[in-house]
Length: 134
Length: 134
DNA sequence: CTAAACCCTCCAGTAACAGGAAGGTCAAGA
DNA sequence: TCTTGACCTTCCTGTTACTGGAGGGTTTAG
Image 1: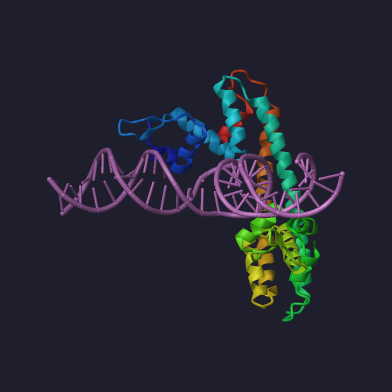
Image 2: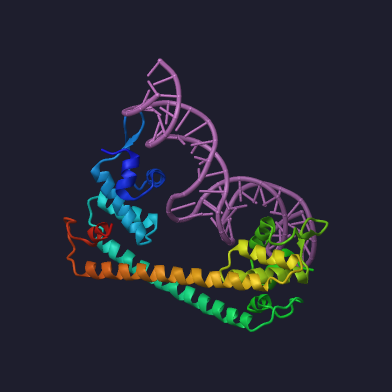
């Protein structure tokens, strides 16, 4: 059995985060020592490690909660997880495309700004270029 | 002079957002009609349009506030904006790299999940693959 | 006179925590 | 014995850039 500090070390999550997961309902309320300190079993740590891994893959806590609910019901969440992963991949691809467009736009503007003189009258600076993008 | 609804139409920002920008200090407190309704001049709309354009380039409001402060002081913000753009481009590139790594990892896991049978005993499902990534 | 379309302020919620205040607990050392 | 430091606790606030909604005033058309 581990105190929250040890659990933190073992899982790579901060104590704050572990408490937050409890409050958010991702893990059941931890058992307490007589003095009120939370204690965690190896099984608890496994659950926390799973959450950490899924978070590292950018799954929202809501999805992770769903997955864990499958497990808590004794059902294999695999099929569900596979579709979540597909959605996740699609969402990330979409986000990458958006960011690439944004970057291209920014590079274009930056190049334009390079070619303009520093204009004290503010008639032809890159700021106007931004404004003109509307 | 325009009411906030017209300003919204003209700028593509919602009325809510315009009020929020006022509260956040990005635009000065709007003049009011005797009945308390906000009124906006063409100059105000220009400022709002600038904010919208900069937001479309994903500049945080804080940066935009800085840029506008330059303008309000009568200084050309161009050099400052150029460095902000460079930072922005670097940040976006960084984010893209992170997302690409994430996607690659997800694809790897997804492929592994494809090759596993649906396992009622939950001994060999993709969820364990996730857990093993820790 | 009323209904629709405006506008106002204020409050809550979003995602996933982090920071910090104020205080209880426990083991080791002077 | 006392104290110091490292733990732990709860509770509250702040983060980003808004959005939604409650509850209410104003104006215009029919």
